[in-house]
Length: 402
Figure 1 (tube, helix red, strand yellow):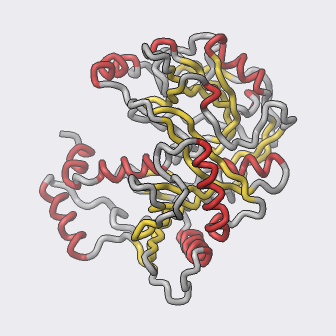
Figure 2 (spheres, one colour):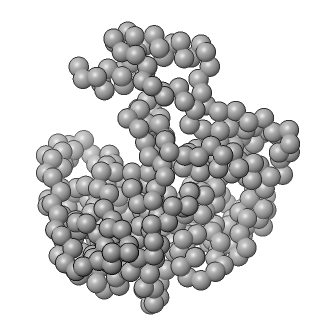
Figure 3 (spheres, rainbow, N blue to C red):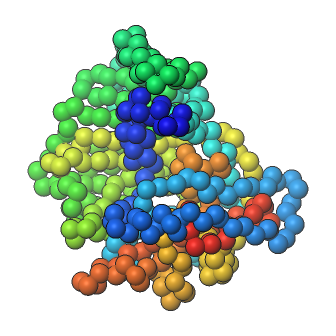
């Protein structure tokens, strides 16, 4: 048995932690899980390595070259089920008619270590965010008890015994805290190193009669709920010009359509709006009874700006897409221009990204996955929006899903 396997067997709960952290990163994504029978085929396809091609034009030496992250693997592929791509909605402020020629690129300060723990965060920033969010919620920040997630002495002893049982020592830094927590008046706030504040309400908050805040509320009902949340939680949203992001419109395997509610600050120029939409957000979540049980405030560390980079147009990105210069978790080759359904500009913000940089996300109909009732699957294919001259090696799809 390999050393890593021993460690995971010893702790037992590490896998659950990884899944929980993975769930937190799936903003605005619907992940379609591949049936077990298909996984065998996909595993064989996925064993191929990613090929690369060099940039064709010389970059400005004042801007560092960027490397595309392709190792942020996932258990399934990013796909959205809908009868038509027009059903897939969002509050993305970017429009293809926008004349944007430059966008910022940031270095991601946070990553995961081999044990699924977030590393690289600044605890002073985490502490400041926790107090800020608590203040927005009307909590008494002077008396608010703040703790971290370091295991207590008894838990540390048990973990140490489990490592010893497989002939290992507890890795250095394993017990170092990774989160800050606070609880007051039935509200718990937990801040991770990625500067995401998760707010849990206990008991869950019931909305007034007339509001439908369930998983399968209609688009109109979600709009009405967003009106209520925007007014009631204006301080928590904390935006100069609150802009709602109602996104979704895709279906689950049972044919139920659903939407999600977020807010971002729509003030400032278009570039600032794009940054806020992708990074600085407040999201609200309902439980199975349609009550507000969770909210998240996203405020990642963007302090290390690499620079403002020239970006290509959506039309140029489409040409690269058709040439195979994309990364994707879809296990099928881009089937052709006639299957291209929708385009948007986004930042990839997962902790597996070395850089937070813009991409064009293309929603492409996957003909192999159309169902008998006409329900289609639209897979996500990403093309770097930064000019090729500033990318060390452009991705080339080689038959594997990245």
